[in-house]
Amino acid sequence: MTSTLPRASTILASLGQAAFVWDIATDAIAWSDRAAAVFPDIPAAALASGAEFAKLIEPVGSIRTDTLGHSPPARGGAAYRIEYGVRTSTSAPVLWIEETGCWFAGADGRPARAQGVVRINNERHARDEQLVRLLRHDPLTGELNRTYLVASLAESIEEAARFRASSAFMLIGIDRLARINDAFGFDVADAVISEVAARVRARLRNGDVLGRFSGNKFGLILKNCTVDDINIAAERFLAGIRDDVVPTKSGPVSVTASIGAVSVPRYARNADEAVNRAHETLDMAKRRRAGSFSLWRPNVERDAQRRVNIRVTDEIVTALNERRIAMAFEPVVEAGSRDTAFYECLVRMEQDDGQVLLAPDIVPIAEKLGLIRLVDHRVLELVVAELAGSANVQLSLNISPDTTMDPAWWASIESLMRAHPGVAERLIVEITETVAIQDIDDLRGFVTRLKNFGSRIAIDDFGAGYTSFRNLRKLGVDIVKIDGAFVQNIARSADDRAFVQTLIDLARRLEIKTVAEWVQDDESASMLRDWGCDYIQGRLTGLASAARPWEKRAETILPTAG
Image 1 (cartoon, rainbow, N blue to C red):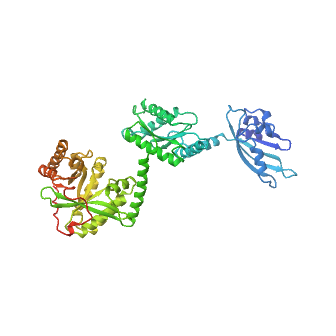
Image 2 (cartoon, rainbow, N blue to C red):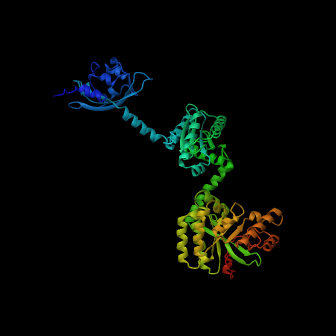
Image 3 (cartoon, one colour):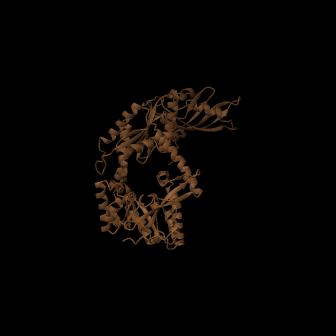
């Protein structure tokens, strides 16, 4: 028994394909049988000629004739391949076509006839569109990703400048998202991010652009938006986010957001400037309170401070390279005898003009701009060199919060301690109280490693933050330095007296030595001595100086803490 082989046109139609011959001279197109099955919604008359068929093609109706006109003729026919969409009306779905064929030239060398095969290619086009969408959009929220958001911002600024219009760029930051993440997990945090995006999206006007800028931040471009409009829009977005809880699988979650914004192109002439200023105002809003809004405005003092920051940053880097970082030494004396127990090392920076920058001029800027670790590395080298050169002196070294977790600093101190035996036992490392609050568990490891060397640990500016005495015991701190803001007025303030006396009493019970900072007069010093304070420092006993008094006379050694 034999079976009849299907006609080629039937096979093509079953694969969503049809063959054609296009007589370009007459513009007539002849199709294979069952072409109507491939183009079910397109009238036969629209397929009968190149001109009628071109009316259905998008995005460019002349794509077929243009392709033939621009491809060079070849002996035996010139091959070509094009893709396009066809539909009978704007309301009809687009049918994506891949056309493969070859054309033949007439006596004048121009295209006279073309033949080939068309096939439906909707699946591939959908995949390509999806890839493009994934390239441009954030996979979680479906909004523009950062790259395309910033590109859209640049275009919007150029457009606004060209037409003398006013627009705005906003950064919307979800408040305390890390807490939600820790409490409920990543999936709930993702649900919150998606819901916030949807709520902002629902309140946009036509033409506004929304994108996910980073993990918890969205960027928003508001076109044709005045300063008054910015304030109104910001409140609308904030209210839309905070007024209703976000339903999640772990239950409802209350969410707020903060917003920073800048008017463009008035206060930002390019995308980088707009992003930086929106970031700046978002940080300001968050510092003021969660769920607030801040709009960037010119500020003479801020701009002047930035110029200072830039100058000092350059000076710090240059001074490090040229070894112009130096130290001053402030005596810390025993409260009873006034004999020097140790010296606190304070950083100084010698400038080209001979002036000297003090620690308050250097440290805050170095911390803010990420240079403090370099400064701390250099100061560590200087302190160890002083200790190695003077067998009887004891020095204390202040380090930045960032340095406590810096592996490179650990490598340096371990190397220096091994190279200079006996130095570690005469080194006191002072840590600011804020570090003890924020990183108590990590800090315990830091303290343990230092104490294993034989060094002692002091908590600086105690009382300015919220470190508990329980944490001091947990850390094994040797010395507490009471913040000078409470000490300097104890002769005149009953509140300060009560506070300082309580700190000293509690420290004594825990067998922790105490240092009172900013002591300015004998009356205060006598009070501190009578309360049991171990050491004092400040104007009364001598401020920081580059001189090295231990080179002239022997110094009293600090008793072992505890």
